[in-house]
Length: 130
Image (cartoon, rainbow, N blue to C red; front, side):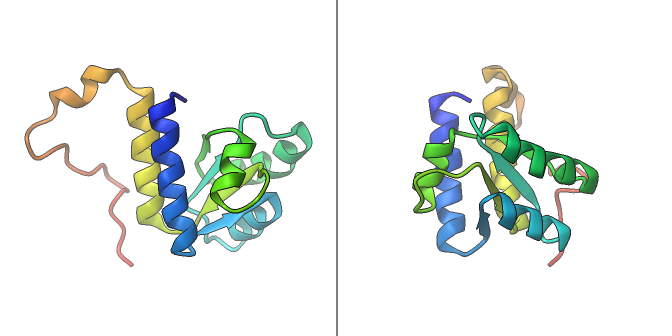
């Protein structure tokens, strides 16, 4: 993840924290996923293998998209902790925004330039009522 994408993702996570649309920590992410509330999970690339082993199989089984985010210290600093291995986003609109930022950062720079003046239409499944 490049520096610009990381900064944008951390900004969105900060908004989610202030709006109480984010759960912090491996156990909280697991609980939200089990309850069906989790829209997206952000996992630190430098998280311990033990933490990853606790959360990734569950998220995969439940079909929750996992995004590799900034490091554990950067994620933790956004949520008022020293570090954290995982953050879960429970708001679907916020999750869509994070996905868009991550996808833009992963795509070639020219991919967005091909869109029309109004932008691309939403993908099927991105629209949600409620």
